[in-house]
Length: 253
Length: 253
DNA sequence: CGTTATTTTGACCCATGTCAATACGGGTGG
DNA sequence: CCACCCGTATTGACATGGGTCAAAATAACG
Image: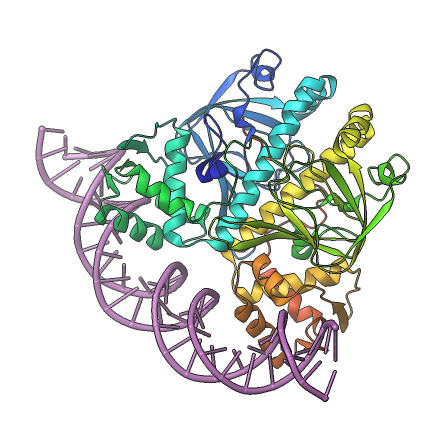
């Protein structure tokens, strides 16, 4: 697990510290299979599927498109905790109210399952429980990585790590150039990385100027020199042995 | 749950985003009770009870003293994910290797339980499972709060929030003045808040100069104007309805 | 009581934030 | 299909919070 994984779970995984049930590729009795019977719904951006503070009635499975997970501070500033992609579950297993607002970034396509039914299923299957637990742990780990990143890294590293994460998320291979789709606006990226729009924009321009990337409109970025980009990102990455597969939690009583 | 709770779980709770099994006040069949039969050990600072990267063999219960939870980045920079206090569990339920180093800040007194035995107990009791799940969720929530804090707040807010958290952790009441014990060094605080030692020191000096606090040596701080301190901290706090008791998780699949 | 680590303070600088002005691009209506 | 418009992105000029480097003061410890 390298630095990019740290941010974006793993291949087929999730990029954000908020949502990471990603790696579960359903056997039969998977968490995803619980949604199979539900009807699919479609929302256009920027319509939210849930609001921070509202009663938490459902668990969601995102089938297509892309969501941002936000929270708002008292003074109105917005923080983005992460993004969700097709295949992700938006799962609210422990609160009576949603802790964040999840808004469509692109047109989305999703299913929802009443919370009590989801809990019922999970309560009856130790297999599902194990899945859920493992993924909560992965998510915890991702959140820790994000803490380190926000606390200790410079703007250019954050932007590079973010871009690599998007690439990885899309299953891009290692060989340059890699063209990626960035559906989020610069403001979303800024709020996710703890920066301002201007800084994000400037860092991207700088990368472009240095020939590390090129663009095709703001939502289409070509990573020209993966090696160098990885180098920059690695300066930021939490140290980890190669091949460590799972995460650790500190739980304090 | 106000901003201080957000950082420090709740009364009798834990202050850090890494360890938050705090609120469990054992009935009978509590997670803590699992440790009752184990012998207690004592370590002097700064001796670690576990190392990042080592095989994860045990789960710990801290009986006395104070620990810091750290991770190290490739370039050697250290990040502190949180602190643990007497009563906390240091629990590593999902990884084969410890994900962080936990070092004694003060002389500590703790018990350890082999991981497989801990897992065995938890697997047999839905009650323990529920406890564990709830606390993992609380911890997740605390980690999210820390993300917002590091991404979006100024140095003075971080320091004030930290001090209030220590006070709360110690069960201090609301009425000024409140004298608190800060066992950690300035460097620990800095690494926790994503700042430098100098900045932490300067912010504390500034608070002193403004009459909001006074000190009795670097480890003894008297909060003179709780109201004003809370005000400063609140500017930083994630918005939350009063009285929300539990947390939410986004888990993405 | 001396020695060393920690904390505090000072001077300076740089990365990033702020405010403001274009430029661009995507969508709409003619 | 083109022209216009509006939201978003980029760029520039400037301000500043916090980092860096260095020194002095204080606390911890033998």
